[in-house]
Length: 113
Ligand SMILES: [Zn+2]
Image 1 (cartoon, rainbow, N blue to C red):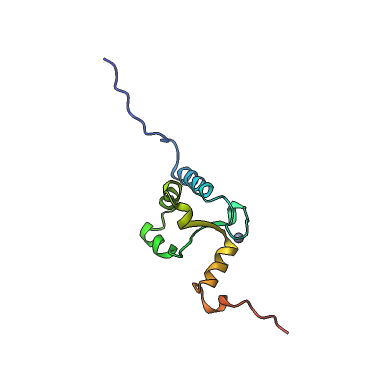
Image 2 (cartoon, rainbow, N blue to C red):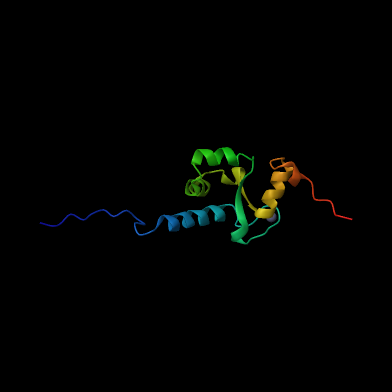
């Protein structure tokens, strides 16, 4: 009698970290791999931004699970309308412009005489 072959799921040997990186790559490629405002393209300083500023609420519902976000971006139909890539600088500037940060960060610091 032939032994039944066990079904091994695809990507069985991929670690959760590798899986996360693979989805991250797909998500970033989908959104253009560069800062939407200034064109900066060093992936180490690029961040996914919620265009409508609903990131904090969304992070709570996802329990800070990045893979879920990356999968969503890679697979959803209108991802480009909901998410964009910003570099860390542009992301902070956007937060300041929208009044999402403390008062001290809203105005550029005046030069000392
Ligand atoms: Zn930028």
